Every structure is written in C-alpha cells, then in structure tokens.
Length: 473
Image 1 (cartoon, helix red, strand yellow):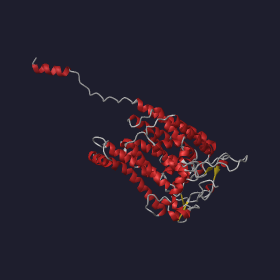
Image 2 (cartoon, one colour):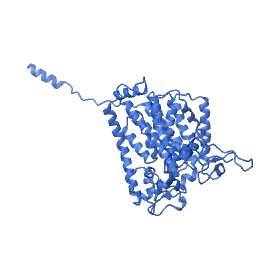
Image 3 (cartoon, helix red, strand yellow):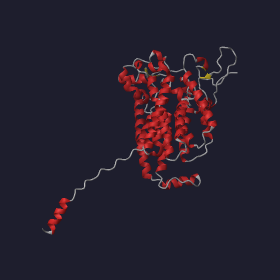
C-alpha cells in the first residue's frame, strides 16, 4: 500500500467535527428579581387602588368619561360627538366649534380605551374608572425599575429596599394616590401620563433605546403636552454615553463644555438623536393633522381647550391658555394653600376644610423638601432637574390651577423625576424622612378616600369662580 493510500485511510477514519452551537446566555438572576419585584409593586398598587376606589367606581362608568366618548365617536367615523355631550356630564369641559361638540383633551388615553369601548358597545357600558385602576400600577413599577437601573449602574447608593419604598411612596404618599382612584377624564390623563413618564425615564437613562424613549415621549405629548419638555433627560444622557473618555469632572463650566464637545462622538450622538426624534416627530405630525381635521389649525398643540364652553372662557380669550398672568395664582396653589381651620366650634363643623384648589405640594408630600439640600450633585442631578423644570414652568403658567383637586395634581407631570432626584441626592432616609413619609401616606390616604365622595363634602370648600385661594378673615 502506498503512502497516499495510508493518508486516504487515515482521513476516512477521522471523526467528522461538527460545529458547536453558541452557548445560551445564562439568565441574569438580578434582572429576573427586579422584574418580579416590579410586578409585585404593580399588583400591590392595583389592589390598593381598587379597594380605595370602591365597588361603585369599579362597576360603573364615571360621570366624566370623555375619553370613552371620544373612542366611541371614532368607532362611528367621527372626530366630534355626533349626539353632543351626554346629559350626565352636565356640559363639563366640552369644546364647541363650528356648531359641533368635541373632546379637547389630547387623545392617547382614548386610543388605549378604543378596543375595550368597541367590545363594550357604548361608553356607558365601559367602566373607564376601573380601566384606569388597572393602569395605576404601571408608573410605580416602572419608577422602581428606573431606580434599580441607577443602583445597578452605580449612579445611586440606595438599596433595593429603599427603592421599593420610594416607588410605593410615589404611589401612596403623593397626589398620585387620589388621582388614580378617580377615573374621570382629568385624572385619567395623569395616570396614563405618569406611567409613560416613568417608562420614558427608564429607557432614557443611558440612552440605550432611543426609538423606544422617543415613542414614549411622543405618546406623553399626546397625553399631557407639557411633558414634551422632559426631552433634555434623553438628550443629555445621549451626550454622556457618547463621550469617548467620559465627561470632564474638573474645571469651570465653560471649560467642561468645551472639553465635552471635543470628546463627544458626534456621529454616535447624532444617530441617537435621529432615532429619538423620529417617533416624536411622527406623534407631533399626527397631532397636527388631528387638530387640522377638527379645528382647521395645523398646530400640534391646539387640541381645542380654547373652545371650551366654561365660565372662564373669557379669561382664556383675554390672557391665553398659558402666560405669566397665571403664574402668581398657580404658585400660591402649589406652594402655600393649607387646610382651613373652622371659624367656630359648632358641633357640626368639621375639624378642617380643604379649598378645592388643592393643598400645597410640601404639605401633602413633605418628602419634596429633601430636594432642596442634596448631599451629592452631578451630571445626572442636573439632567433630571432640566427635564423637570420644563413641565413645572408650563404647568405654573397654565390658565387653570388644577381645580377641583385634593392636592396639586399637575405635579404628576414630573413627580417621577423628583423621586429619581430623591434617590440620587444622597441624604440618608433617617427618622425625620420616615416621619415625613408617614405624614405623606396619612394625608394622601385621606385625600384618596374623601375627595369627591358622599359623606365627605363637609371637608371641602368649593367656590365656582376659582378666584379665592385663602380663607377669608
């Protein structure tokens, strides 16, 4: 046998080597734990909200089911309410234009309700308040995941237990609690908006998911337009992660800005900005087309509030929907309104009354006072404040203070960002913080069980012109 034959036999007898499949990545137990805890936060919130909302709100439609009315109109090929507002809504916050009636609230919550209204057959058969209760756990659960994202990346020193506490304090220690158990149109928008904002914060951190973050921001605009101004959080995070050697930590602000410009990968940050902007622009384009179809304007922000048939229509016509004219009053509501003590000691007099402009933010949630003196500051601290200050300013210059309300409900437009700031502020959660948390939980529980409820009217003082903020002498 030749050498060639020996080589052939050897080759034929060698075992064939099969390519091995790539190993399956091992599941991340920490990620699984975070998701399970977020699910637990969601379930806890929904159960508590459902109990506090009560059987009537869970089983019947709300009196002000504007979003369900809008969804029903769409199902019948209309942007207007062909039969006009329902009698039970008492004409409250409907827009009148060119002889037709419209829902002037931004439409995304109605989009969420659309398939369920179709299944129910009519707005009256759809339990809109129950639907909002089912959504009420999303914001606290997403906020917990955002807090944990900061912890796992080393940008927050809070423990898992502290992050759970913060998420639940947001749910039950802020005006989000009373908001989530109402169900009617004004409060429904806040629940949807807070959920979208918390999810936006989760995906905007580290700027790893620009398309998702942009979509969430666009949907935020279609729910609560002032929240479009939280965009700086993603923008600054995109710049940070695109810096080749990290952000400069030393030198004057001007020097650091110049150094950052030199370090940033412009192509990388431009790609993130473009992906982020695409869904935002799509949502703005949809809003512009939607408003043009109804009111003949291509403004994406003109959803129709200027056409509301309300007693303060003249003030909007004179001063606009937003402006400096409203700032002093709204600052007073947000920061100074307190419970009224009775002027007499009559047996039937309540121990206190709440003006339905709502209680001051620091009164219902004194935890916010910890934002005034953080122990640690940095890039993320500045980014979160820049994101929050936009909706804060717009809400303070809005023509309405939020009336009627237990507390300053517009704070839902930025409260999740404030809780992220509490987490990274570095102040210990000692006995004083825990005492403030107990106060917040107690007052917001009272608000959730008492606001707009039979048997509790004596605790609330209402004046229809909205001009009186403080108890008369």
